[in-house]
Image 1 (cartoon, helix red, strand yellow):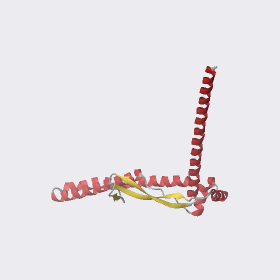
Image 2: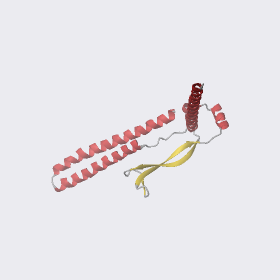
Image 3: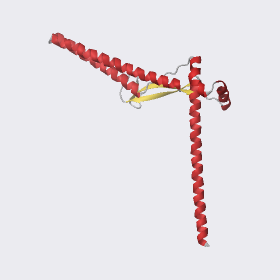
Image 4: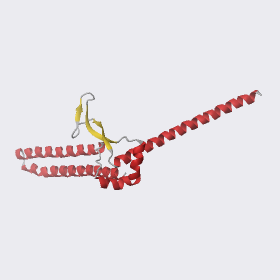
Length: 194
């Protein structure tokens, strides 16, 4: 009889462990669903223009970038941007909003009616492209000035190098700026279509 009791106890433990794992899994899935629904709700409210200006977010860089400030404590450069967060509405208010502005239609029709436009925030990639564009332009200008001075002092043949250096640096600067702006425009279009 003893071996049966031991087996029964082992089986009870296995069943309890299985039930415990199942409960944990269900709780994790429910939390994921709640987070997903919260994100969808926030996106819907944002698409309707129901936003509250959020907190100021700092993005830190190892080098100075255009429009950056210096943080004495962290000894790094940073830029600040405001993130818009969805208004905090009750479940009843949100249900009422959904009656008149269903989440499926909000992205396409509501934006055009309200005239709200989403502005895409510059990320590290766009900021890096802008910095590279500025560096290329300034290096081209400085080298052209050096060639101009050397051409006057040494040999007029060096003056021919000015357009060879200045024009490609201006073209590179222009293309890099345009590429950065295209990236921001695509982000803006992506935000509008969500």
